[in-house]
Image (cartoon, rainbow, N blue to C red; front, top):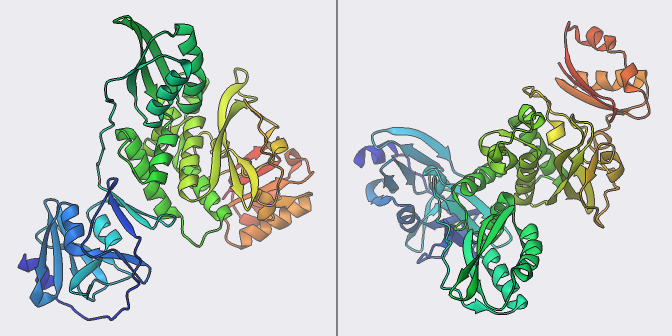
Length: 480
């Protein structure tokens, strides 16, 4: 133990006035941690007693008085922090392997050594998120998979449709995946008519069977919940205990993505754009299997998109909904048809998002080139109106929400429209002179198929460029 502490010998002290934020809660794998000293917000960082957080994370905790150092040791590594020193050191138990800069140094307040909870937790490969709505720190350990409880106390016998409907709704609200309801005096037709509307609105797949049981009818259900709904509910409730292994893996990956690409100072438009670009750059649309009607189930879910990096439209759209929700955006998934794919019209999914009080439509799937091209993202389907998306999309269900705003359309917002060859040349030159290596423009009334691209070769001096043209949306994308 002395070996690490000697390597952390540099010490200086910093005096900070703490902000006591009674109401900050810290959760580990869905369970709230209890500290003898409440978590405190010091200069924008949540600080907690080092021994309490270390032991909660399964570490042995040591205080090295002569060096003013705290050390937390687990089988797979160690972290060390010096009071007043803005670095946290990582060790394999034999030598220091790296260090992390801290915004706020560990310090002693009221005889307690406080350390930044995020840095320490991430030092042990945990995922950490801050929920400003509830003043909560949410920590999930690497590889944690909480069991999904599907057992319920022995069912009482329900004798009316209203009792049956209430019992079914309670099971679904508790996210049970296999359960039974015992009935008396009801027909199978009664229970089928009661089940179908609830199941279709609540879950992705559901089956139910009937069995006679001691003079009563036992209805047995097997349920698969919509993964995005499960992950979003866990995020909003700060409770991951109902997630299965795949759902938890998606949850942790989504949280990590948001931490890496989203900052608090971003506008809603900037958040939306970051998520759109991340998905388009990191996911390949499974066009071959899609065209052949060959179904790989996980590609239709966020697991395929975020973990396997390959997905169908539903998996991509649902991943966008998860990430957008975690970033604080109002977003839902639209289901319907896309026209023009062979053979015939095909089921499809895209998104609707609210930016500055107005709704827009976007389709990340069709902003992803096929086949995937590294570094190339399309924006033909970024923040369209109902009529623009309606050129080749039709939802299954039309609701009362209308998408008519144009301010945050990608091409309008970024002044990328052109109405003549001269204007195309001028705007391309402008973007190229700014150092652009990927330039996309949209026609505003000009026949895009008549664009003369020779100017591009003259301007750039290149013999070859990669470009996409989408005449139905008047979009051209050029990668230099």
